[in-house]
Image (cartoon, rainbow, N blue to C red; front, side, top):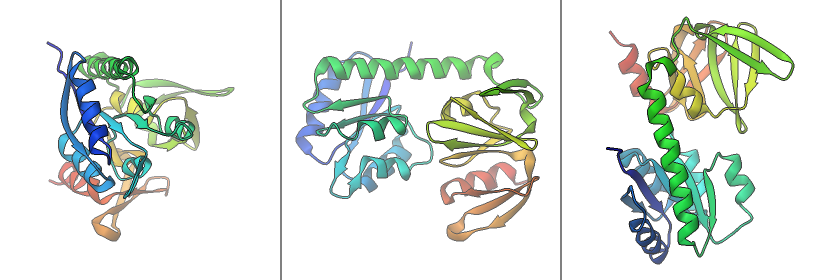
Length: 244
């Protein structure tokens, strides 16, 4: 049986949250897991509840929906729900799944939820199929414009968000791919690649030094001399993964 889609609602207006919860109750395969009314509460709820999808307002007294995303390491799928249509471009630049303008139509919400369900199901299938998980010795084909390479996964030092795309650094080269960081992370062996911060995956075999940083974080020095910041939130996981 397919697990229900876990949905978190973030909106500063109580009636708006109630309306979305009511609409969600009429959609099959959905589980409402909680709600938040400001930026700090939304960040805390995402970290604690690990929703599959967040219905996210843009304007709130404590900040914006974009501020919520900036403070979260592992982003769930996001559908912006707002009374303003002029944030749409910025929302899709942040890899939003959809953008709904209030008052929300039941059919539009259902369509957005179904897209999220399909995306989650696809991700689950990818992780569940060992043939789709890439190992260190696997060769991958990279193309950036007219440039092409065959590269072993172990040669890739880091993968960094670059706008709506991801830039891979390998050998003395780099390539821009039309893929999100989360999509690439789902294909990578978690024993090889580590999410150092919201914008960066790093190859653990390419780390040559670990230096303390401010706020209990770390700076990783890679074998080409480049540095990657490990956020405070990810520092504990890094210690656990690399300790004896």
